[in-house]
Picture 1 (cartoon, helix red, strand yellow):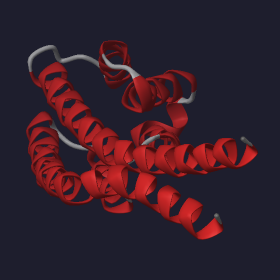
Picture 2: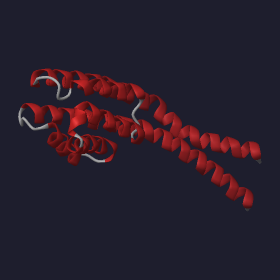
Picture 3: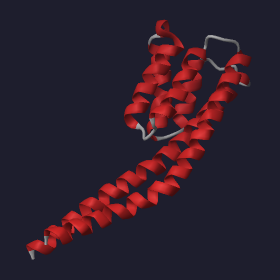
Amino acid sequence: MLKILGGTLIIMTCGIIGLEKSRSFSARIEQLRLLNAGLKMLETEIVYGSTLLPLAFARIGERFEGPVASFFQTVARRLQEDVASGALGAWQEGLQELERKSSLQTQDIEILRALGPMLGNSGVGDQVKNLELTRQHLGQQYLAALEENNRKGKIWSTMGFLVGITLVLLLY
């Protein structure tokens, strides 16, 4: 009885680890999609609403959930609390939080990091161009993440259980 229980626990644990790894691929896809949508909203707020950055980031943060919402809310809060540090400081702080809480990879964060110095330091036209360029780069990352999920996501979800079964067979 204990062997069956132990074997089941090993298989379930390995399976859950595999499913969690597979879920991180899906989470990255969703987060890239939300970031792209958020940057498009920011562009709209800047161009058509002539909205100040703190208010624009706060509005965008209210529309999302999870790490992406937290990112936009952190930037908004930092812009409102510490005006002296400017948009770049707020953007970098938001990116640090996004990096900790999200499933994004380093190259995704670097694309966003490059946008920071441009926010609030140039005219509307230049900001729109930089936002569009960043969205294009994120779109490319999104497509790469989709491909990676198709390739590796299914493998991880199955491999976890198979490794668990193999361990049980080797142990017993």
